[in-house]
Length: 362
Ligand code: F6R
Image (cartoon, rainbow, N blue to C red):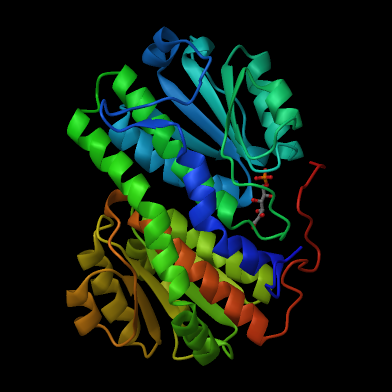
């Protein structure tokens, strides 16, 4: 059941600290530091790959964009991220050296399965990242890593997004160490940030009333923009998707630097802008973009852990510091924002119109 929560979505938002602890439980050796994901793909193979091609849809695609940031920065491997329905495998002269990583909560998404199969047919090795034991993707892929988030009933993906990214951090450390590009200090920083994450997420959940208040303030708007850079950019896309799915408002995520190349024309006093100003995402540059939209009269809600910025901006929601994974903490704050905007509007949050939990047709 919903354990006293009004909606499954809210229950699942609140389950995130536990989901994250499950994702990392027994998989980290803090002393080495090292990770054990029980991966069958041989070490020599992971050392030799030239590219990882990620295929996914919707929220899982956003997790893929975040994964690209992590893998390219810390595992020394080129990564391309593909909307599964737009994907055509291209493995160059040596398809074997391309690892295709399918990210799918359900393990049943038709577009993702067909992308994976097409790549396997061309000779690529395949790895699945999923939440669902016994799902089709676990049978199709050469190897599977589970995100262990527990069942997700709400149509809008919440805890599975953060668990997907958290599990990708482990994968990044595993591959980065095998390829000798990740020093033990950075590995320790990444794993430390992962260990801090459940507590940081809990602190955000404890401030739900503040976010509910912010949502009530803006709930009359019918267009919302989200901006962020580097790892905060996929979080901007994901936060906008969440809001549009459950509130039916127009919501769009932009790379903060792209605003002035067009979208700024949409910004008015009627369009709230949610700015993700996390410490590792060039926040000082994004602040500049915040000033640009503020001067057009747009109300801005900045999500940040930086006291300096809290003083600088009109409205901020403060999150705890969380090292390299701070954008994920901001994501949780923005899940609460989306939920409360939709709830203010009386939407059927767990079953938005026209949407299904798993999309088994192409
Ligand atoms: C958004 C959402 C969808 C799914 C997408 C992929 O909240 O739930 O965008 O993320 O349909 O589903 P999976 O991950 O099951 O392949």
